[in-house]
Length: 499
Image 1: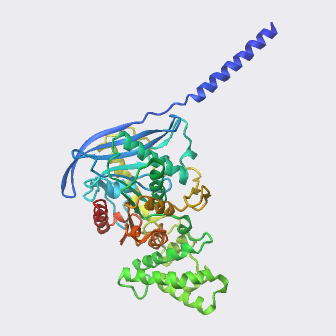
Image 2: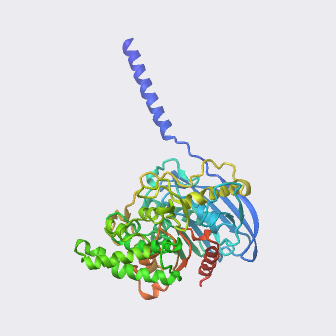
């Protein structure tokens, strides 16, 4: 009897174990939800009728297993020939940023009203018809990658499947291909626009789409692009970022009245500082301890002249100051720190004796207005009822920065550089054009770094002519500055129309 009871108990354990295993494998997958509404607006001098689809799209792996819900908002004009009308896919960067900034700042038909270079932190928050939207020229799909907005891993998907340079390029590319298929847009002219880290993403996406899915883009738009890890962060023991940041330090000091005498012409001043950065500052850094004293003193004098910081401060920093220290030191005597994303912004210091910035005034100034306007628009105009928690900056875990550059034979470089991917894509798709849009007051992705990307792409002259660089007297999100907003739309519309 005891043996029978023991056997029954063992069978019960085995049965329960199989049941638990089966239950564990049967993962509940949330349903993709899409909300469709009809709208009309007068944009670009045209009366436009269009359909908006907002929500998520279910993505699957090669085994047809659900892995993610990708977030998107699509604007599609009514009437006309869809095969001839361009379609543009757009996103922000981060990594881990939702597309709210481009969406409510310049591309979409509604625009958040914020104070340029000032704080907009108190309601009631306002939004207006965006007369500078691009939807009069193209159908627009705003993408929220996995981990941002309402997008998330589901089913067999895990965060690490999406949260890395190459994983992100793959998932965004496959969303674009799936959207083209589900909406019968394969014949349409195709554009991809990325801002900030969206530069790294877009360089990779242009090449991945071409080589893995035979999708040839008509054009790529890079807004304030970050494309090479080695250029982006001063203070990592690499001298190049210090050189590339210097003109933006100078532009910032000029803007805040820290230079005496005050340079009147911004562009002429930027050319002057650029020449110094390349021809005097860079060689001085390269020499290290072998730099002669007389040459060091000459460089220190000009660093102080161009940035408003003392020679003594530059000397104690061994000629190398990172962004956090610059924005803290520039107006320390007034207890004010400038912005990094847009250095025209300024705010009260939290710690006047600190060595680096504690917050970015630009983000604090406009962030609440952008999110409030977006949520109001999504719920009231687009009638999205299941909004959940919209992740403006998502938790994307420990980002895998390794990238299998096409010139490294499969080796994954820990310092990603997708300007190489973009170069390969341009050589294999020689009709593809590139527009880069860059602000002078951008300390997150400095304008000299953008010039550096272009100048170091290994392209024949006829393909280099396919690249256009436009400058704006604003910061990273140049489109919150109204004159730049007007120019942004003009430049973008001209580009997609072949100009």
